[in-house]
Amino acid sequence: MTQFSDLGLAEPLLRALTAKGYTTPTPIQAEAIPPAMQGLDILGVAQTGTGKTAAFALPILHRLNATRKVIARRSCRALVLSPTRELASQIAESFRAYGKGLGVNAVVIYGGAKMSPQIRSLAPGVDVVVATPGRLLDHLSSGTISLRETEILVLDEADQMLDLGFFRPIRQIVSFMPKARQSLFFSATMPDEIGRLADELLSNPTKVSVAPAATTVERVDQKVIFVEAGRKRALLTEMLNEPDFGRVIVFTRTKHGADRVADHLEKAGVAAAAIHGDKRQGQRERALAEFKQGKIKALVATDIASRGIDVDAVSHVVNYEMPMTPEAYVHRIGRTARAGNGGSAISLCDDDERPLLRAIQKTTRQTLASEDKRLDPTQAPRAPKKPGKPAPRGRGPSKPAHATAPAAPRWDPMAAERPKVAQSQNGAAKAASGRPGGFKANAAPRRRFP
Ligand code: AMP
Image 1 (cartoon, helix red, strand yellow):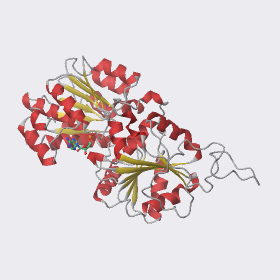
Image 2: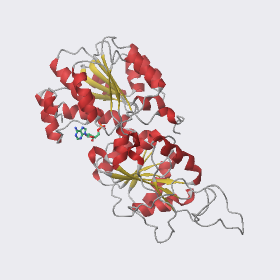
Image 3: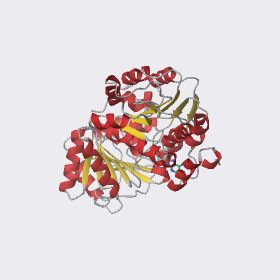
Image 4: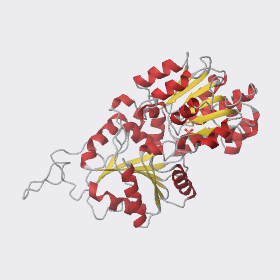
């Protein structure tokens, strides 16, 4: 197996990797680092959680170090575009950590923060700028950054960029850059629209792909609990009072929903904070820091805010509401089982959300282990019982597709209270293995998160 020491990376980079305890490159790193070190363009199909940040940061740092030069004022040698502030901060942190012994500087630029400190940090010229597209355009139009001499472009999480409507800004940004540059392009999925942008930006790219979603999915112990929408809050509180729910990310569909759930948990004595796009950057950073330090047990997040949350040892991800797309599901559950650890993902699914569950199961080609905690589990979803005519026990008119072999649930606070109806083995998670970028965005309609 390839080791980092086989890749020809500069000595200080190897030392930084050793300090982090990394000896073996992840598959995306082993595939992407050698061609990227040669200056080739890369088209990478990979998600967060696969080690893709280092897959582009290490070769960039290596190249910047090997070709040191005086940087013009307000210029940068490498530009990394990230969809969210959190991810941008984390990428910049990674550059700083890996590039510690090289004296390479990295500056992060995002919206929702004051312009003036950013202008000051860009002024002398920097090695690496990590930016969200909107704020970078502000700097470009005010002339506080120049990309005329930028040698390397990274576009990270292209599919998320598309969801956020960033393709136009990206095209504008690229128009400020030299044509002769190295471009590294990463996306978890590669639908047509993303493929077209990749064609525009890349020249004869080396294609690298791993089946990250599957890898991540396989390591996560997944389960769905059928429950009425109105009983989700009580169930969530019970779950979070269980001792093995140590560090939990709870996902809601809306910002308002995230606030409400966090409030409810706080009132129920569970230390929680919400993180979403309406929170000020300071609040988001504080919530994330307290979560990392273990001061709060539950971080309640929307999909968008969750991008880039890379916290070790998240014991559980709870989908308080089912995500709108299978990709979002894979992304959400990938917040646990980070860096080779295991983790659990529990989805609370009410009757109206069953179509979303079906889409997830279809796209990820797995049947989730399930448990029915509805007050009347014999009732078919959305088929109200006729008064005086109880539905037959055990076999409702539309028996859930998941009803096969029983699986041992890891957690079951309501076991005594509720008869078990249907469970199935989480057996087919491997389905997406070997299917690089297996979770095709066009498998289900893309929808914006509110
Ligand atoms: P990423 O996909 O870049 O978000 O990385 C996912 C996690 O894996 C981060 O916590 C990294 O610090 C960690 N990581 C990256 N590369 C390696 C490696 N070669 N060995 C072990 N952990 C790694």
